[in-house]
Structure formats: structure tokens, C-alpha cells
Image 1 (cartoon, rainbow, N blue to C red):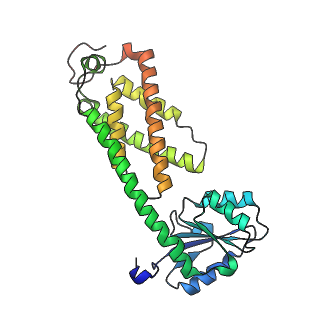
Image 2 (tube, rainbow, N blue to C red):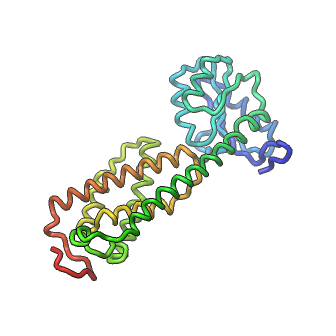
Image 3 (cartoon, rainbow, N blue to C red):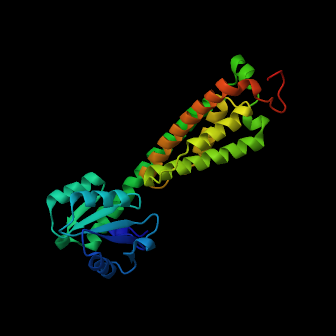
Length: 280
């Protein structure tokens, strides 16, 4: 990225879209002319999962609800700049409330200015959010890590065995870790795109597997901490926040299913390999 002396970054990837019969093609041409090194696309199927800038060409006939829906669809791609052909201030405020980074009237649209005002500012904000997210993630994993290193109580040892799932059944631990990691990804996708996926059966199945292996609460926390530590703290701030929220909810649900398993089937749970005692 070239930012010397306030110059805009090069090699930008910009997605331009119409809302309410806007003129996306005209805006795309103006961006290409002002920024010849930028890659500008107007077809949704050509847009990447993450772009440097989303420019929404909003026609005068656009309704506030339509603009809100479009912005909500695009905020996960990257920063959103709304260009209003009619210059309606009220519609601009609607855009900001819906999550757009900025708005401008079409008559005042300047590609170079938008780079400074939106892209660079967004990158600086994302960098700050990334550092904050990394600190929160490290803080949570450190706190839970200290909990895991505290050793087993006599009650825990009698109920679930003194050896951890990681040590007693490493293959099962690894497979459970992969399943939980996949469930976190699915939960994030469901939260963002709302495809109707029901993860509860998968959580129940994982709880059954852990329950029959005599996994305890600390084993679940161990899986959770390992998943968090493997996660990259970079990426869109909204997606990171969703990941943290959904992973916590999944672990709480998993704990609930595991507790229910023990209420119903604990008497038939098998003894772990390598465990001492007479667990039944």
C-alpha cells in the first residue's frame, strides 16, 4: 500500500452496485479514470468476499428500506460509500444509520477524495479494532487457560476421571476439536447470512460423543480455548465480534447437552482407556 505524503493506496478492489435505478456504470467509469490501477467491478458474481470499497449508486427513486437492506448486505464485504444522485440528506442519514461509512451527493463525488475519506480511515479503524479484538481474545484464552491449569478437584476426578480428554483420548479430542471448529464457522455463517441451518442436532451429537468418553466441563473449556487460540484476530471487525459471541453460545449449549447426557445415560458410560478406578 502506497500512502507516502498522503497519497491514496493503489491496487484497490472496488465493487460498485445500483440501488433504486442508480448509475453504477457511470460511477465505475469515473473511478477507473481517476484510479487506473484500481480493479472495479459492477457484477455481483465478480465481487470478492472482501473488497477495499463498496460504492452504492443510489437513484432518486430509491426507498429508505431498500437502501437499508442493500447496505446490510454489503457491510460484510468492506467499507461502504453511498453516492446519492438526488443528494437527499435524509436518505444519507438513513445510510449512516444502516451501517454505511459515509455518503456523498453524486455532484460532489470525487474518487480520490473518497479514497482518503473512506478507505484510509476504514483501514486505520480496522487496525485499531484488530488490536482490541486480539487483546480481548488473548485475555479470554489466558483466563480460561489459568482455570484449566488449576488441576482437578476430588469431585471432578471421581465424576469424570483424573486424566483430561486431551491426554486420555487424543484422537477423540482432535476429532471433537474439528467438529467444534466447524460448528463455530457454521454458526457465524448462519448469523450473517441466515440460511436456516439448525446446529442443535450436531451439538447434541458432539455432546453424546463427549459424554460416553466421560468428558467433563474442563474438557469442554479446553476445546473452546483451543478453538479460540487457533482463530486469527484479523478480518472484518463485525465478523470477529460475531465469532466471539457465537462460540460462547455454542459452548454454553454444548455444556447443557452434556449435562443432559449425564442425567440420562451416565450409568452406562464406558471407562476411559488408561483410567484407574471403577467408573461405570
